[in-house]
Image (tube, rainbow, N blue to C red; front, side):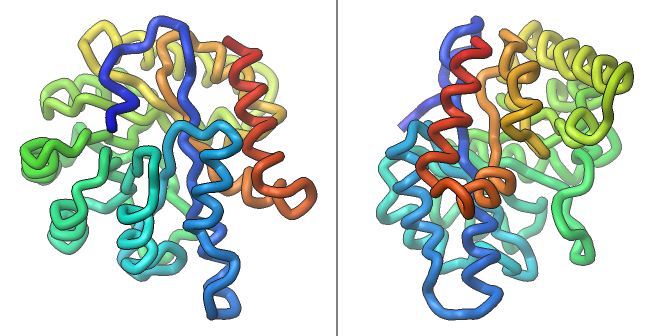
Length: 250
C-alpha cells in the first residue's frame, strides 16, 4: 500500500502516528499492556494515514515482536525508523515495511536528538539507501532543514526526507519564525528536486498549525505528545484532534 507516491501540492497532509511510547509505558512494568498494536488500530480509526515505530538497538520501547505483529495485522502502512546498522537493515529486509526512515541513534539519548548528517556520512548511507530501495522499501532520511542536507539526500537518491522540527518546537518568538522559514525553504528545495518532504519531532496541538500550513509538506510524524495527551482524553481523541488541526491548517 503506497500512501506517498506523489509529491505534495498543498492537499491532504498525511498523519503518521508514532506508537513508540505506548511501548515505553508497557515496558516500564513488563507484561503486555498497553499494547502498541492496539494503539496502531486506534490511531487508524481516528484518522492516521500510517504508523511509525522505531526499533532501537537497545529495544527500549518497540520490540522485534511488536514489528512482527504490526506487519502481520496492520492495514495502513508501517514506517520503520531505524539506525544505519547491519542488524536493522536485516530486520527491514526481512519484513519489508512500506517505508524505512534512517535516523541517528545514540544509546545514551532519551530521544532522537537532531537530524542525520547525510552530508557527512554519504559513503555509509549510500549502502543502506541502495539496499532498502532495492527491496522496494521507500527510504526516508531524518535530517535538519538545511540546504546541505537536502543536497546530500539528492546525491544519495533518497525519495523522501523528514525534516527535524525539534528546534522549531522548543524556541519562541523571532527564533521560531526563523526556524519555520528554514523548514519551509527546505521543503520547497526538496520538492524542487523531486524529493517528498515530511516533518516531525516535538509537534503539539499548539505548534502544529504553522508546520501543517507549509504546502510542500506531505506528511507529519507525531508520537510522544499524542501518547501523553491520551492519558487525559484517550488515544483516539488525541489523534483525531491532531488530524483536525492539520486539516484546518490546509
